[in-house]
Image (tube, rainbow, N blue to C red; front, side, top):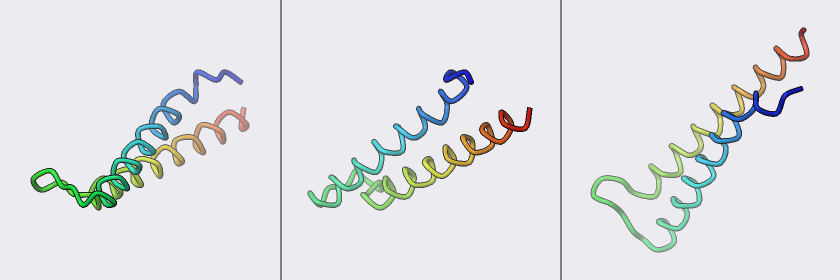
Length: 66
């Protein structure tokens, strides 16, 4: 199994974690950027992590199906 096949899901997981962490910091500090507040960061980060999970699962299924 080649670890480079999972590069996209790993990068997406990291981006999702960064967005969720930023959202938590924004929520704790009560910050907002114009129309972007903490809830948007957390929601986008969660969606990105779900997409990364789906991509990783599909790639695993395709690898083990061969």
